[in-house]
Length: 161
Image (cartoon, rainbow, N blue to C red; front, side):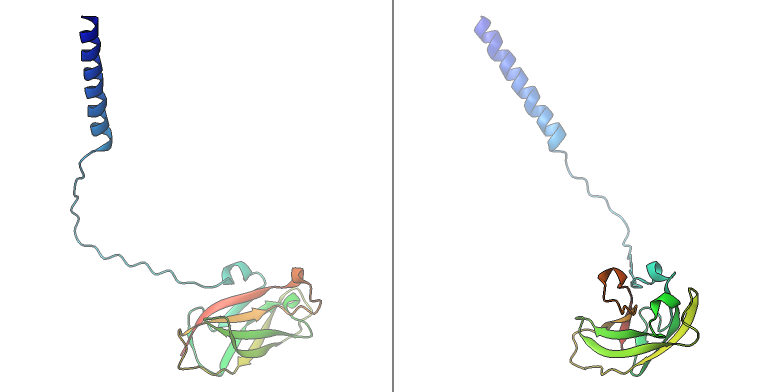
């Protein structure tokens, strides 16, 4: 008799355990119908201009602007960005290859902590066989010391025409 009660209790406990398992882990999936909605999110990169705005500001070209050669680059940078009233400017293709270089020249007294306007011109050849028209304009802080701690650069994405 005790054996029959134990068997019945084991069967009942097993049934409850299996039922609980199905209730918790095998919930039926309900299909929720929603109207068709097209969501388009475009993330536009502006390079690192926001974090560099207290050191250097680019007026032209703007981030993601379509550019052609010769490229006129204008803006303003604090005096510490220059050395001997200039700093290097590069244009790289989507792969990081330098396709054009120039020198930005101060348009005022550069030995100051204030912003000083600059202008540069970059000539480049736009290859028609390039995979992508994306490029990066790099305005490099002049660093005559060569110390990595003094390196800095403004990088702006642009589109080659």
